[in-house]
Length: 296
Image (tube, rainbow, N blue to C red):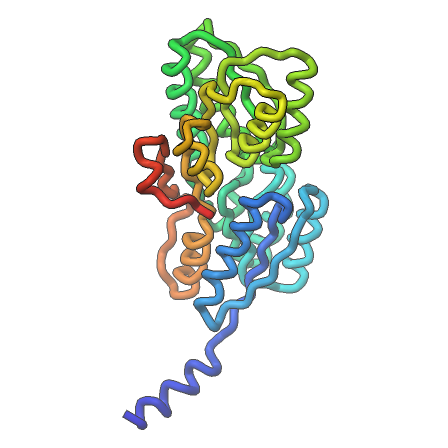
């Protein structure tokens, strides 16, 4: 036994170290902060992986600079959740040209210049949310859509999937407002909506955080909070809202952190990794909320 320990120890000690740079859109968003924490948790399981995180503070220009810094530092992998699908693709091509592996989680870019993209199917989530609300409204009414960050692939797909279903129903109207996936921005939007006396019969929100902010304003102004509301993410506050009947449904949106780190490990070990990996998303309602754990 001692003979084997002596042989194995030097191999472990001098195994190659790999540096991973994570370019996050913003850490001010609770979901994106949770995503970073979960990536750190997964990375810490491997002694040969070192993680560095940069916060773009919700600015595309800052995220570009952050990625360029990772490229100049010669990291082995870049994990990114791009704020802008078009502009970020240019700098990620530079990374790929340098031989750096690019792992996109939750958001993608408008090119093939990445190694792996991992996320739930945002377009399908949008479609299913639309079907749910159209049925609940008996194919007639106005739906307020609280949109995420402009230019982000998740925002575009959640919007397009929803609209592609709704356009089949001429008696369904859509009111679009942008809340940037942030609770505080959604609060401002809802205050403006009520000031402008905009009427709506249901809410489709691109994130549960925005929906929580919306309900805060509705409760404060003593508005009807029993209208149908559908969100995405499924966080702890959402589980409570669904159980209490103040939210009809949510779609689980895993951070893809575990899958992203596993892709890195598989690449290091020479395993074949699919270029696009779809993570399962489950619709949560009052019927199954007790059985499904929130993502955080």
